[in-house]
Amino acid sequence: MNTQYYLGWFTDMFPERLSQVLREDITDRKSLVMISSTPLDNEADGATERSWLDHAGIAFADYHLINYRVEKDAAHALIQHASVIFLLGGDTLKQNEFLMAYGLPECIRKTNAVVIGASAGAINMAAKWLGSKRFGYSVEKDTIYNGIGLGNFSILSHFDLENNMALVQNELSSLSEEMKVYASNKDCALRIKADKIDVFGDMYVLSHSKMQKLEETL
Image 1 (cartoon, rainbow, N blue to C red):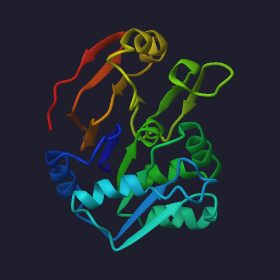
Image 2: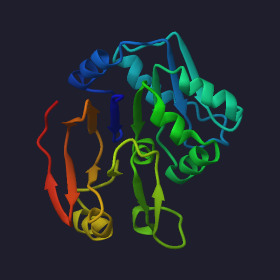
Image 3: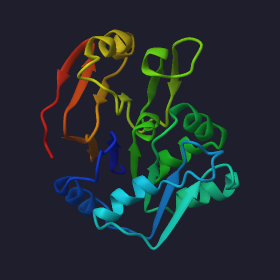
C-alpha cells in the first residue's frame, strides 16, 4: 500500500516536523507528477505546491504536469513511473471531471508512488465527497461525487471549520452514516501509511453524525 498525504492549504510553507516526515517517506525522487485542478489553464503549473516541497528540501530529477495538453496514454505512463503524484489544489469539480475523463483513478490506485493532495486534490483522493452550494460549489443541487478511492472515507479539506462547525455537521451527516468524513482547515495534514493514520494540525472526524477532534500524532 502506498503512502498518502491529505493536505489542507498552507499559509506559508510546510512546518519543519511535517517536512521531516515527508523527507523520510519520499525516498525515491526521480519524478514528481502533478495533476492540475484547472486542466484547461496552461498557466496553472503548481508553483505554490512545488514551492512547499522545495522549501522542505525535497527536489526531483524530473517534474511533469498533467492537464489536457498531455495525451491520455502519456498521462498514464507518467503516473506509472512517478515517484510522487501530487494532486494540486484549486477547482475540485474540474479536477474530478478531468480525472474521470482520463481514466486516472484506477491508474493512481495501482501506483506505488507517494500520493499527495492539497485541498481540492485531497478531496478527490478520497472515496466520495459532497458538492454543495453551501460549501461554495457551483452546483444546481447537492451531489455526491466519486473520488479516486485511495481509502474508504471522505475528505473536507481547507474549510473554515471553526466558524461553520454546525453547517459542516448538518451537510455531511448523511454521508457520515456511510463512511467517516475527515475535516480540516488550513495548515493540516492526514498521513496514511501501512494502514496507520497520523494527524498534523487541527483535524476532525465526523462519523455517524458525531464530530470528534483528532489527537495530533505528527
